[in-house]
Length: 620
Image 1 (spheres, rainbow, N blue to C red):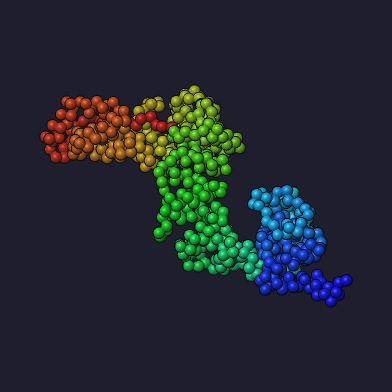
Image 2 (cartoon, helix red, strand yellow):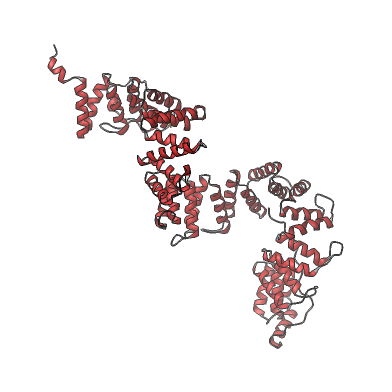
């Protein structure tokens, strides 16, 4: 027969209190053992604490599965904290195929589970909703907040803004900081009433003052932009962002880093700014990664590190930051931060384009036009995207589609169809005016009409398009259209084209100033323009500069320099340059002339040079 006095001292209540005391004193192993005995006897509170032991690894080896099983037992017995914890576990994800009702043997209370059993964890929001609702309906404030969270952020089938508002409000009334946060965000985003905005800010501030990092981030935003009718308070915003940043919120780390970078609300500090932006980027904030790229490219103070910029732009691009993808492509195209790599540039332009960056479509097309080889499926995809834009009425998309069709990007060339799209785009896109005018002038895809063609090219030239300026100038020099010649106007257009970066126009200016045209001859200027064209690789510019230097035209003769430029032109395949280099009579004459020439005197010759070669196709 049991001793009643001994039974009293060994009652479940006394065991539970003793286990709690042992836990408080730090003897977590003995405490866990006592809780385990009570849990096996059906004590819900002890089962919950056994689950906590497994989940936290206090008093036993950690095990997510066993923690969830014992938490489930406690929740089934009506333990509210266990219901909330179980709902949280389901929302975060339990091992695939996990069965909380599986029996637990005594040996299993102290066993561990291999990593492969918990490798695939999947959220189960329906179970999370079920257990959160149990706790919420019983009045558990944190379970109510979790239920609101599931109704907002759970799968689309479970989302219900009104239910979320209801449960966040109930949670906030019980003093739950998470409830204040959730309700505050809903009121801030989904109301047009000033009174509710004020209430939203009050709720968020309460949660922030309670140390909720997300609430601090929200309050930073409120103070930075004066949300809720309040004043813009940069110093206060910076302080809230700092608190949220220290709490590990990547978006707040990024904003705090930006404020430190720009000195908004606090003293600028590049070192701290870089550190916080880096933390945010490592936390997955693509905007922070892109800002780091900007920081290293601009090079404030000691931070000019283009290679490091490449790394962070790539990080941002891989996280779907479209501007970063485009910048990364441009850096590879220019060779900034490393060697030039047109293939990598095309890769990142394509990534940006497939994610909706329409400028990247044009950039990718231009790379392909320049000779960068890309896979057929990539080119087909490019043409399809441009076709969709064009069909939707986008004139720039129509122009770019026309270029693809004219050049055979994504399909075999279709000149007739290309002209149709250029015609549709010509009233809104300068480049389309030029392309349409050229094709009509040349009779490509439509009957030739030089007058109409020149008219449209002239429209593009009026807008300053370099290729159009050079092409119209060529026609005004030669008089190809109805015999119309206007050399002064052509000279002005060549200057405009050269200022816009046209190398052909530089050569043509040299040719016009060289004489034989209805403009004042100026051999000194001609030589200067030939030199500019030659330095940029223009083969005829190299030929003419070589001749001017050898013959002393427009300045003193420079025999070695002249031969060097003729050699460069010959290496590019210019037969005339090759012939001059092998013409011993010519070389002897220029050598003799150089020796006998009076300083500053130039040989008198006729109009030198040739007008520009046929213009290359314009870019997309």
